[in-house]
Image (cartoon, rainbow, N blue to C red; front, side, top):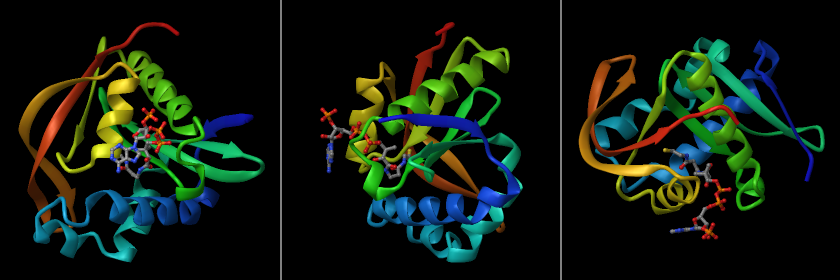
Length: 161
Ligand SMILES: CC(C)(COP(=O)(O)OP(=O)(O)OC[C@H]1O[C@@H](n2cnc3c(N)ncnc32)[C@H](O)[C@@H]1OP(=O)(O)O)[C@@H](O)C(=O)NCCC(=O)NCCS
């Protein structure tokens, strides 16, 4: 499998939004408060993908946008691959890239939030060397302000690849 990584452009926003919307549902329905589901409308993913294009790195496999990461300061804010590219190793390449971005942003430790019921993601993070620091109150951003979402905080000390 050959994976090409590059910064996202505005032309990538529709594909990023679709992977984000579909993956968000796969990972979060039944695992987060109803109030968060209500604000995560179809349009909301397009809006946020456009707003955060500058923080997004995309993975291209066979000419197709297979997944993306978004990094803000020391937080790996989003890690998503399309359903057809899960279990292929693309996600590990993306997460390693996100760790390097955190390092370039001047931080020695990266963190991320994951909901307790997202078993696949949690196993993936642990296999990539991330540690579960336990439950915390995550405040997820939305157009209605911050929404309290019980989550786990995962951390990893980052170093030069
Ligand atoms: C999280 C994500 C990026 C991980 O990428 P991936 O390609 O699926 O990850 P991998 O297949 O390499 O690793 C997942 C592990 O969980 C296992 N797994 C699969 N389904 C599982 C399930 N329902 N419960 C528990 N573990 C599961 C896999 O077997 C694999 O373990 P292994 O390495 O021991 O075989 C991807 O699944 C995804 O985009 N999910 C939807 C969006 C999401 O949850 N993003 C993260 C938000 S915090």
